[in-house]
Amino acid sequence: MFYGIMRDVSPQSTFDFNAKQTANVMFQEFYTQRGEYVVISAEQASHFAKGVAGDYNPIHNPDARRFCVPGDLLFALVLAKFGLSRHMEFRFTNMVGADTPLVFSEADNGELQVCDEGGKCYLQVVRWGEWTYDASVIEAFARCYVAFSGKNFPHYLTPLMEQHGVMFNPKRPLVIYDSMGFSLERLDGVSPGLTLSHSSLDVQGKRADALLEFAIQSEGEPVGVGSKKLVVSGLCPYDADEMAAIVDEFYRLKAAYLASVD
Image (cartoon, rainbow, N blue to C red; front, side):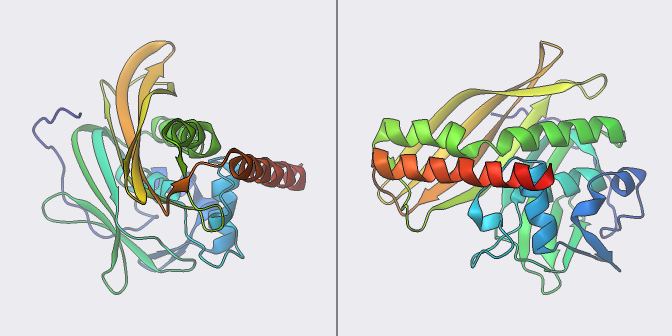
């Protein structure tokens, strides 16, 4: 899917949001810096999910029993710290709970990692090709991708599940962000827009892999491609009434949030 070229990355020390101008001005309301650690509260994560990504998944509500920090927030903070490369691949390995001290670092081999103080890894990133620290370019791309990514449900997943006659357990819906990646033709002069180009669902018993492929344009011209993989667990037969109730709840939560910030 992605075409590799000679990697061109230089080692960096552990994450310090004071080290780069890009990080100082982007997404700073969604984390707290405590020494070498980045800490994300449930309220900060929930605000990002709803206000930036348009993601109203209850798992990102501050009072959720199984609360987790949105993977897209980690994605945005990686770009803020390490810049935007033409080719990047992200793999999410664990879910981050509220107030977990995180270290963003670069290994000797150039791989980027987000781990906690005990060494548990939550995100691994590989990148190659040219890169930029231009704050305006990075923030525009990050916000554009996150807004696209936040439409997983109901916009993209519901038609796929209906087509295949399956759905997640309505009493315990579980959709896991597995990985994403993209390849850009250039970094300069990009005003990005993302559109879904193809989607598929590979059903394997009680779970399924959803692949969302997207095209990246700038002012109507194609400038890149990418894809995102989700894992849907606890599958059961598709029930139109159950799904309609879940979708209605999504839009109720959306309306309630928008009313609260007006």
